[in-house]
Image 1 (cartoon, rainbow, N blue to C red):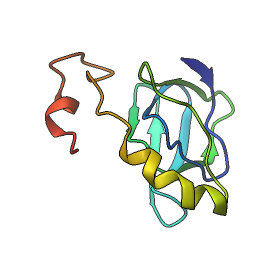
Image 2: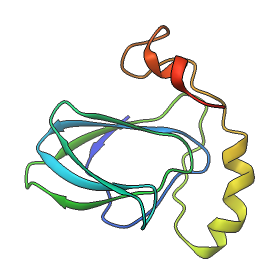
Image 3: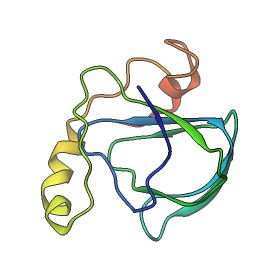
Length: 116
């Protein structure tokens, strides 16, 4: 778990899923790569990113504080180059489904909606 912000450049993780909890402030974040959806996040929001989900901060309040967490056993990496696009897909495919919802635990809705 780490407390920080959200990087302002497009990146993704090929070896782990990620959860971003907005502890303070607001941010405008693009999810799904450079052509992805732009969402406003505010204190109390949680974004769950399956491995391979591109994301970047477009705007943020000066007081933005994000708590980022990763499932146990995942391999954190930061992919953003052309080389990563060739090597990442096989790694993404083998990242296991989360054992529990990061917010609600073992019976949380994420487990029921997660697609293999």
